[in-house]
Amino acid sequence: MQAITITITRPEEMNRELSLQVNLAVHLNQPYRHIVPACRSVDPGLAACTNLTSSLGASKVAVSPLDLRYIASREDYWNALQSEYQPSCIVYPASAQDVSLALQAIRAFGSRFAVKAGGHNTNNFFSSVDSGVLIDIGSMNAKSYDPSTTLATYEPGSTYGELYDYYAQFDRTILGPTLAGVGTGAGLGGGLGYLSPQYGMACDDFRELEVVLPSGEVVDASAESYPDLFFGLRGGGGNAYGIVTRYTVQSRPATQFAAGNVIYLFEQTDAVASAIRDFMQYNPDPKASIVATYMKLPTPGLGLNLDEAILLFLVYDGLDPGDVFGNFTSIPYLLNTMAIRTYPEVINMPIPFLTQLTRGDNTFRVGVHRVNDDSYQTTIHQWRDWAETHKSSYELLSFNFEPVPRSLTDASNSQNGGNAIQMPDGPWFWISYILETLPGLPQAEYEAIQASFRDMVEASGNADGLPLFISDASADQNPLSTFSTFARLQEIKNTYDPDNFFAEKTGGWSFT
Ligand SMILES: Cc1cc2nc3c(=O)[nH]c(=O)nc-3n(C[C@H](O)[C@H](O)[C@H](O)COP(=O)(O)OP(=O)(O)OC[C@H]3O[C@@H](n4cnc5c(N)ncnc54)[C@H](O)[C@@H]3O)c2cc1C
Image (cartoon, rainbow, N blue to C red; front, top):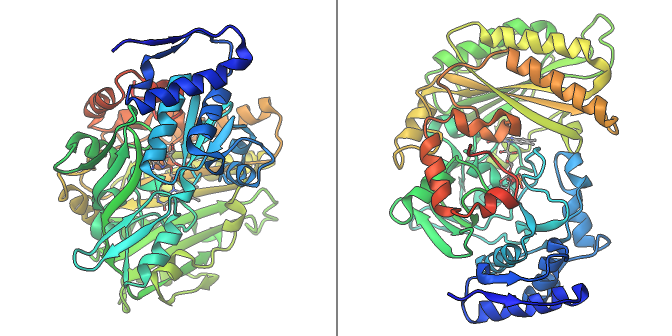
């Protein structure tokens, strides 16, 4: 194919002329990469935005930072630091075709870009962009349920909380994370939730994905069609192989749950940690699920540990958990809110403290450990020592046990040949560490505290042969390289992004 060369001498004409040429190329079904702008002085982000305003229409593109849609999208990051970046425009696609047009324009103008779903990933430029095009897929939020197949189909713009609410009317749910505000990007990173011990990770339930490839082509990926792409997207992360514009997943029954929070004072640290370890190792009932959060505030403990608390989430799929949580409820606690709840109520269980975790200067790190050594104890103590000696540097700290029982890895590996994480046999566990730094820290101080926090997490030592959870990882932890499937994922990346368009123009996990 001949390259279309445009020679324009006046930069102010550049955007308009190039837009016309790009629109012509789309009309003639020519790939954009053959359009070679002869003038490079123009801002690529602005040029792509001008083009997209004309091709998609102003109703789908917010260019002004004062536009209310622009403000809402830019504000809506769980790590408030991501809101500091200023996209050249924000695109609100309504269909896979709109996403395809956006990608093609971004490619043609050499702009940077980012794809944003729920905005909960805390890493720089994973779903944020400075001077480039932000594709906010939040307005693609259609959803449906087919009772004859029990399959759920949804677009990527809803939060998981909205999806759980919607599927509850059918007494069903879909697998996903444990908090309502998290977006559908979580499933692409695996997706660990309360039903995972029974059914596996959220991505194990994927059946078909509509994907806009980096080339702009729209394909349906499943076990039969584009199986390598389907494999990569099941736990291998978002914004690497394409943009998912529709999910079809196996739904699961969900009616009534015995669930609640149990809160302890920190003096029970060791007793609760032992109970968690025993639960991870010996719990025989996959309907029982726990998440354990240790929290630390920067306020003084006054010798009474008033700055610390342990918050357990205990969830049983059914009305009668029997004695399955007995090891936890036999430890003296402050509060126990166990009750019968629907699944949306489980997800929205009252969570003291956690509201403070929204929209702070939040970052994540992850560790992975085996159950049959003492790392379940030593990691907490290392974290707690660090918390004591860095009181002036954080707003809130949390340390979260995320158990991966054998039933989970069996369920995961029994579907579609396992996911991109290829989870080794459980039990083992991830720890997610969340650091919320004080707002407005000077850059040097911010970097120093992040480096110290990183060193503390690294010092706790990860177990060899176990994968890091990408959804909880910091970008510098390079989690994909811990997957046994890394070489295969690199191949898939090369197949679908052969000219490194995504690799160079948007943030995301490293494939090197
Ligand atoms: C408070 C909190 C609680 C959490 N709880 C859980 C939990 O219980 N279980 C769990 O597994 N994880 C959990 N996570 C981690 C969560 O899975 C990740 O942060 C995930 O990346 C968030 O997805 P998102 O859509 O909200 O974020 P975004 O930042 O919008 O997206 C995350 C990444 O995926 C990409 N992406 C999103 N959608 C698409 C798409 N359609 N196509 C291609 N790429 C896409 C984005 O570009 C970005 O790189 C939690 C995170 C937070 C902050």
